[in-house]
Length: 204
Image (cartoon, rainbow, N blue to C red; front, side, top):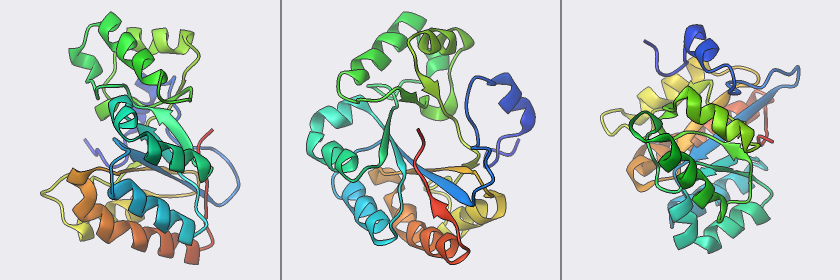
């Protein structure tokens, strides 16, 4: 299965989620999971500002609790934020009540009803519960795989440029684990897409 651009049958299975933004505008949606992280998120924010680019940060609640100052900088820069659970739980291996409680705990620190499940793994019963709580659910159209330490920056860039198109939601990670690849690929992604006339928008 192609994990870099999820196939249609997966998208249909999780039909409650937004996988791509259908619009006629030449827009790309950069998203960053697992932060905020000292130095890494700061670097991302500075680079985005240089390109006048907006993005969406799906934050882990415990990281926001530890680094509220960085979270506040994300919000002040008018990027979107989203809930990525408090503890980075894998929904398939977590009891429903524990999972929902973890999301709600994260909501004490993350002022947003946007939600993305860690690993993209979540049960249908958890989805239904979160929708009842008013969450708007997002997956992705393109996975950069920047977090994979076995992948080179060149491979990550290949995935992004091969599969991205108008309206694509692209996943990066503002984490220590992903930083080696992220530092190499994000400047290239921003420059190439800007040179091609794309706008970088935030999810809402």
